[in-house]
Amino acid sequence: MHIMEGFLPWQWCLLWWIVALPCLIFGIYRLKKVLGTDPEALPLLGVTGGFIFILSSLKLPSVTGSCSHPTGTGLSAVSFGPWITAVVCAIVLLFQSLFLAHGGLSVLGANIVSMGIVGPFFGYAIYQALRNTSVNLYITVFLATALSDMFTYVTTSLELALAYPAEIGGIGSSFILFMGIFAVTQVPLAIVEGIVLALVFKYIITLKPDILIRLKIFSEEKINATRSDA
Amino acid sequence: MVHKYTLEILSVIAIIAFCVLFLYTSSTMSGAEFSGSDTVGSGLIAELSGIPEENFSPLIPQWVPPSGEIEACLFALQAAVGGIFVGGVFGYWIGQKKNA
Image (cartoon, rainbow over all chains, first blue to last red; front, side, top):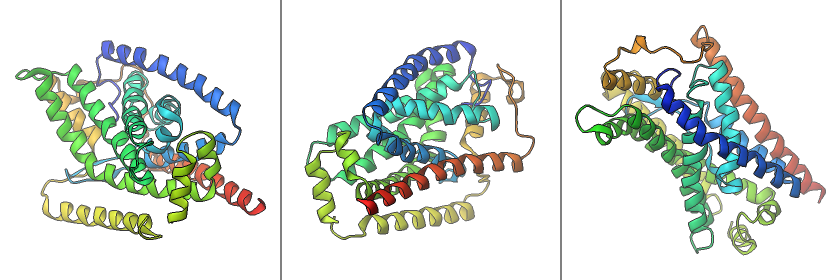
């Protein structure tokens, strides 16, 4: 999902930086607040953030004959919401810009918006929609994770389509072209990522259910129901 | 949960299916290079803008890993840091649970 350094006109770089910065500042504010109210939130942040580090470094082959990487943002989006997730993603993306030439400092804003903000926001939205329904908790986590991943790549496609409209068909047709590269490649990765992170969530529930209840990530009844089933 | 290990089983199936899919794609698709989608995307940018790909240069000067080996090393480092976080916290939680 990285837009490579130099491949986005400076006006767009600036626009995405302007979108990303307030989100990051709000994310840091939220992060301080959460960590201040509950010291046990820090280990949970370590696990959910750790998976962003791990999964975003794995470049996996896919059906389109090219490789792409999962984002790993789903667990963090469910546990802490998109703003805090954006802060963790910014750290990972900064590392990749500085040392790996994946993305770059000028396009970092655009990459934070896709991987850190819009993707996790969609994951968070589906989690919010389902958390108080009878839908199984793991299916909720699966959907939130898979959608965070998918929408990251849809956003990258949109960012590029806006900057590079096709001569015939404009933004719409270049959006479809970019989706063909980014989003199609991502479908199998998003499904596998969703299942694996749902499994990780199961282990978090087994080991540390109280933190999920205290942070009101899922209701106590729902978590206890899952535990007695398992 | 219908079964105690439903999620474990599903994960294993998903990962195996993913590998099979890869073997199938790589053996049937001619010209599949498995380069990064970032690179393929940049190719499309060049096509749409009419500017040759080599004419794009970084807006902000950038350090590029001198070889694939060094890049792999740094990616492994990133994953290792994540692994330390995850493993460390799970260990901490297991310890807490034992003491409780």
